[in-house]
Amino acid sequence: MQAVFFSRSCAAVAVFLAAVALAACSRPAPAPEPVRAVRTLTISAESAGGVHEYAAEVRARTESRLGFRVGGKMVSRSAEVGQRVRAGQVLAQLDAADLKLGQEAAAAAVRAAQTQFDLAAAEFKRYQDLRAQGFISSLELDRREATFKAQKAQLEQAQAQARVQGNQAGYAALVATAAGVITATEAEAGAVLAAGTPVLRLAHDGPRDVVFAVPEDGAAAMRAKTGRAGALKVRPWGSSTMLPATVREVAAAADTVTRTFLVKADVGKAELQLGQTVTVLADLPRIEGIARLPLSAIFQQQGQTAVWLLDAASMTVKLQPVVVAGADGNTVIVGAGLQPGQQVVTAGVHVLTPGQKVKRYAAAVPASAAASR
Image 1: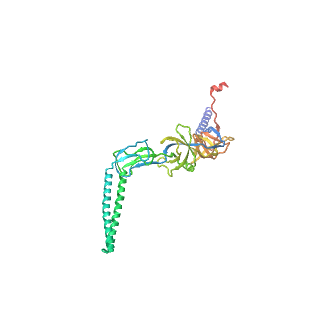
Image 2 (image 1 turned 30 degrees about the horizontal axis):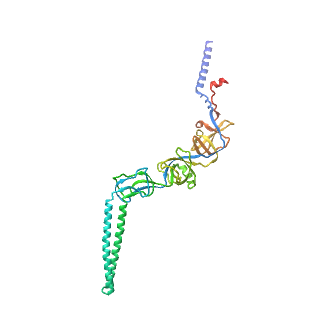
Image 3 (image 1 turned 90 degrees about the vertical axis):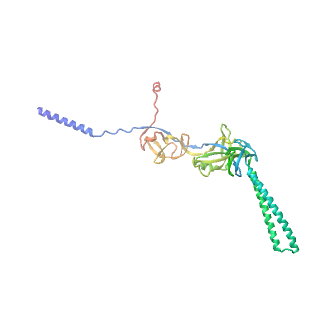
């Protein structure tokens, strides 16, 4: 009897151990994927326009870099930055000693050439008389005539050289070519300058430009506005007054450092100070049938811009490629890919997969509010 009981007990233990072994070898069932809560936005058809604003600086239409037309040592400069000058006013002076010596040498050369010319003219007159009386041949008269003409040419050459030297002496004074304002000084008294070295920068009185830079994607739009009167508006800093401006010039190439294009717009003779800061406003073309989405709704999928659309019937999401037409602050303007009435996921887009089950996000109700109900 004891042997039978012992054998049954052993069999029960074996069955138990086998069950434990089988339970240890089998994998637990995976936990169901959580249903994520998402925020959504219903698409409605809109139109977009707006205004682009650029910071600009007021500059003179014409700005000259003035320099001496001859080389020498600058002994004085009477013009300073911000000074208003009139046309013909002396702004700086070179040491003109050598130039005056050259002028005197040229004058002496003229006197010598004049003496030689007078002698040749007198001889030619006498030889004309002798030829008329038959005392000399025609060949000899021709020689004297050639000498006379050569002396005349040398006199004219000396006179022209004297005028050049006179001009050179006059170039020792740097004068304003037009009325305007000095905007920069580039050389000081005592410097030895080569001909043409800039000394001053002069902003001419007259029309004014506002100068600003636009990014590469805005250059084409600015070129399209070129020549259109009042295509831009200018607002002086700290003022609500709007002034019309016309795009006059758009740089042909981008700046090598900033990669922006320089734009010059004409504001005529508006009462603006040189160097003043202004704001340039450019209207954007209106786009119909667009949608506005927060930045959080947009993401990149395999190099393409896309959003998640919510299927309200099955409460699943699907991928939808879109075309972005621009940005307005923290809002993205979608130009194509969406239809009015569609629901777009606006939060949690980076953790979703196609066909994933979701639920709408519901804000938690504070305990105090729930107790008061």
